[in-house]
Length: 334
Ligand SMILES: NC(=O)c1ccc[n+]([C@@H]2O[C@H](COP(=O)([O-])OP(=O)(O)OC[C@H]3O[C@@H](n4cnc5c(N)ncnc54)[C@H](O)[C@@H]3O)[C@@H](O)[C@H]2O)c1
Image 1 (cartoon, helix red, strand yellow):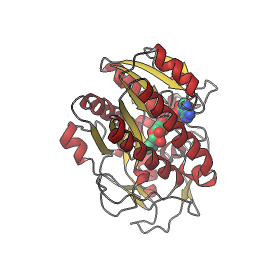
Image 2 (cartoon, protein in one colour):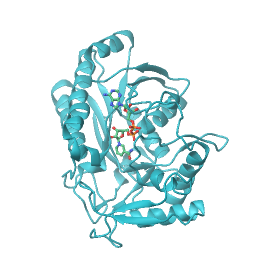
Image 3 (tube, protein in one colour):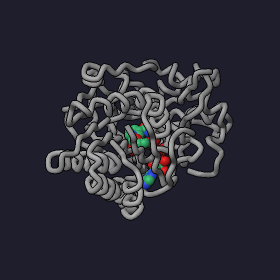
């Protein structure tokens, strides 16, 4: 298949593009580079710089290529920022996704795999299943839910086939056959716990900050489910290939284990051999106490198995990436 990957210069999109290429598909990455990195795009993919909100650019793109499907990653992703600047998130995530969906309909591209998030759910003390109560606690999660809703209506009314994938916390780095970490997290600003924690042993920050230690969890810090970026990528390949036979799919992707912020820092201490000082700060707006996935449905229906079920292995790949790329892609973009 010829696949259009929006946001394919970003962390998850670039790794997923590499997995699609390896599975024998043709990949065109479309990314404005507002956050991503040209250097992250696999060499065998075609790269086109552009914005999903630019309808005339999308007309040229769809007129000049024959895409079978779109994998839609392009978005802003910072929950904290979304609470301070909601309009930025509604515009780029919701409004611009609608421009993309309409262009897909105009040019008859009727398959989408969409990057949704655990942030669409209400916090829960047990593992979340796909039909558990929805209730975003931040604007970012709300935007993803609104895009899910649009996609469901485009399916019902216009025949779009979709796989909505709700990722829990993406982490780790892509490793090549020689064991080198070749793609990893390089967000600017970085807001994710594992890369921030690993900046301490790299001497890039003095301590890691824990936002809130008074949540209703076992040690008072927030609990999340950490899933390796390559395991997310493999789920996209399975989901897209299944869209030939299935018209709608919604799956959680996580490992089914909850780690508190303090526990993640402890694992990073073990992996790096550094004592990684931590300081506690007040809660951030919009953080849910606990989000852990049940991915049984994805496993049962598509046979998805994580290659990296253990956090130690995941953090080891991230550590290899950050040690070999202490300044990210170093290409001035993103
Ligand atoms: N990282 C996570 O833990 C996580 C968890 C759940 C869901 N997600 C979702 O996965 C997707 C990818 O996340 P990521 O961590 O790789 O983020 P990222 O910031 O690394 O990648 C997003 C990419 O989209 C591009 N982009 C943004 N707006 C664009 C636009 N209007 N037009 C064209 N390109 C645009 C950026 O330049 C960037 O390359 C996002 O949709 C995010 O909401 C991520």
